[in-house]
Length: 141
Image 1: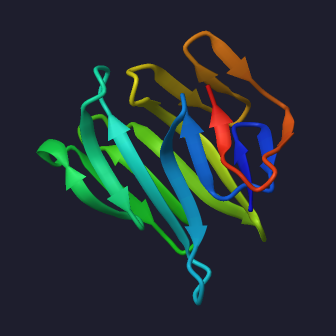
Image 2: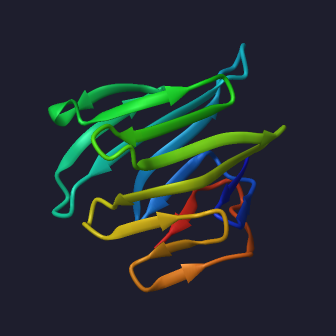
């Protein structure tokens, strides 16, 4: 599976996105329906888990502060009070999933920001690159 994170294309991934060495997002296609399924862990600035999504369903939702919008081709997680998009992923073509928008803390408490043009993790910025994951995870650090 190929995954776009911002404007960066990660080829030949296993569907895992590791952020600062921690698998924080897992993307798969349902074997029979082809629907996009996302697993995601959301943390606060001190690394405490706020929400956990398994196959597009919030299994843990601290203070019921988050909601999921989903179709067969897209998944978005929003903060209810601010309506801020924390994670947006969608199928853009066969074999390509785009992580085009997001803003959330890593397990280590750093802020990851993803826009259509780049991803930023603290002071590190990456845009417009093509990286071969060789069957492994997307690495953001």
